[in-house]
Image (cartoon, rainbow, N blue to C red; front, top):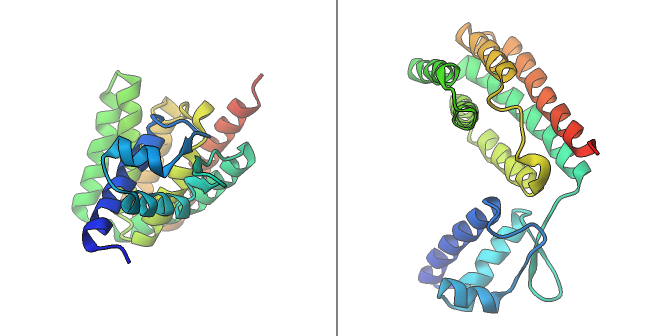
Length: 213
């Protein structure tokens, strides 16, 4: 049975490896071995073994006869995860319209104003991504947050062309503003419908990239 010290080390190594994989520092399809990771991270086998097992449970790694492989999802799987994310993000918009606090509403307004004034497209896209996270927090539903995070992680395992997205575009600004207006007006059904349309467009854009020759 792992000691408390090993459990703490396992979580540390889990987060380290997870971040490396999602940042692309460890390529999709790459193999990971306990022996090399113990040397790389300067630790013993037990916490590494537990960290790898956690990443396997997350769907990030796939166990093989020897070691693990970063689980690169198929194009169809990614589209399926987009459909799941659409349902979850729409539910979060609906819940935010009902539960967002005055402070959370003001925060989301300020974020979209900042995005509208930002000229750097990368920074603007980052603000829009954080706006989605703020909307999710304002739903006050931890289960939604957990499942959306999982869907985002699995989508990100498909490295190309997923670096490209609709985030930060003028259309996204307008769509996010429409969702926020519904949230501010306490119109949950409208917020859900508008978010669903926004997420469908994001999915369609990625499908277009996937099928481009």
